[in-house]
Length: 141
Image (tube, rainbow, N blue to C red; front, side):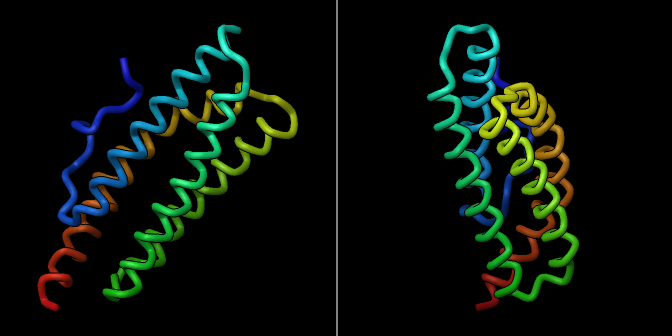
């Protein structure tokens, strides 16, 4: 059983955003699996750490790309959208630091298990309207 499914998310009107969300969900599901194995002492930290690093890089690139598109097409709610991204990144970075500096895998597990709720809410109520706006602006070009 996965932590999050693509069917929980609205379809994006911008293909790049859709693909990014799908890839992010795969990574998130892999982290959850690795964290559970680590918690059960069936895996060492190496794979979990590697996958978590991949996720951090992916999320930063994901948010930067979205923000660049919003700026390019003068999205009116850019500041609100970016603020949501910044808060998520702050939480992710804090959890990652706790893991890397102190070996506190519970911070990662808690973060990963609460993330699907944030993703579904953010994608469906913030990213979907943003993608709709961006798609219309892209067609006008």
